[in-house]
Amino acid sequence: MTTFSLGQVKLRTAEQYRGDVEVQLEGLVLGGQEYLPVPALAHAELAITKATTGSVFELSFRVALHGPCFRCLADTVLELPIRAREYQAASPAADEELRSPYVSDDVLDLSAWARDTIALELPDKILCRPDCAGLCPFCGKDLNLEPHEHEEHDTDPRWDALRALRSTTSPRAKCAALRPLYSAAMAVPKRKTSKSRRDKRRATHAISAPRVNVCPQCGQPKRPHRLCTTCGTYRGREVEPLRIDAP
Image 1 (cartoon, helix red, strand yellow):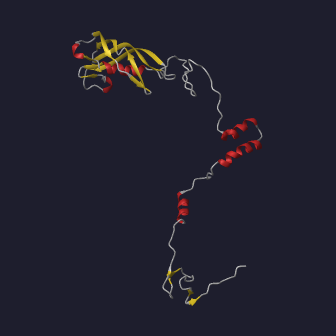
Image 2: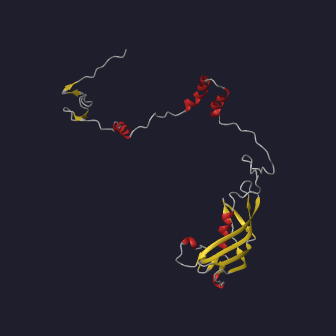
Image 3: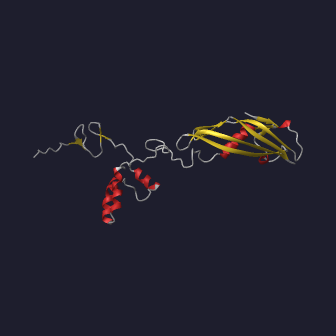
């Protein structure tokens, strides 16, 4: 990390300091890919201008980032001219927007300043060339080196019914082509079921235990208004079950 001590520069209002510094640059990670600055130690020019209410810092240098292309993953070099400017108010009570985040205790963090400035200057996509064709989505080959096309693969057979609509204009034929899709479709209610209707339906789902009485003859449990299966009596009378010969 490269820093610059502001205490070594004594300036009065409207005076300016210019000097060359060697700034240690850090790599960037974009989309899971690492881009390294070459060289890692950049030659930069630092300018400090003293204003009435603060100081203006200017940093300029050139950097070359080495990393993969976003489309074809080939080695790519991106050269960027960097010019950055920061303002630091002299009063400690000044608004946060008037104070630089890279100045702390009269020390200017050049590495962090350079890293953030490079990140802001990056394009949306780092490409080896503007018309990069990328990689083939089927075989993965570089289309810049081997331009080619693949034959169209057969689609899902369930789309055959829709494909048949291209060759017909008759409404009856269209309905016949779409009938397989309707038969495979799942039933959908016309409107949403309200909570009260749902609860009324579920109220009939309760399971209750059957009522059981005691047989006055044998004392065994039996269903009310039914023959006792233990002693064969009903209301104190012995009942012989009806027997009918099979035809």
